[in-house]
Image 1 (cartoon, one colour):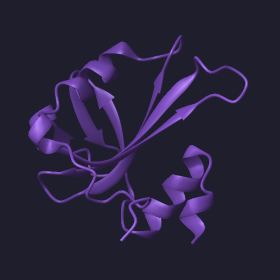
Image 2: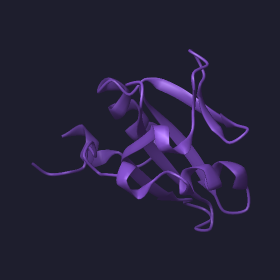
Image 3: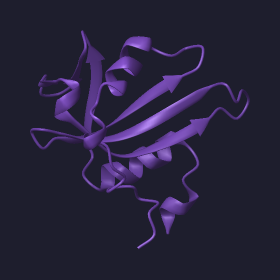
Length: 113
């Protein structure tokens, strides 16, 4: 299966896009905004349905998390968040505020069935 060989964020992004997670989001002023529709979402409007963590190959302190998300309006997409020295602390705080009840692993493509 192709997803077993996904080693980089872009590999997983492609897999999830093929599954309909095509929306792109950016963060601004404490909201997550759909880049196309301009719809904005507070943390309680976001559902994380999978996540993948990565370490930099040349620098293990260079970390990123790929969030697979759904919104309260049914939009599905991805958000890549960098951690480490280049982290955007405001965006990291947004994701920390997402209620735990809105976080699952239900759409993770690495889950064995």
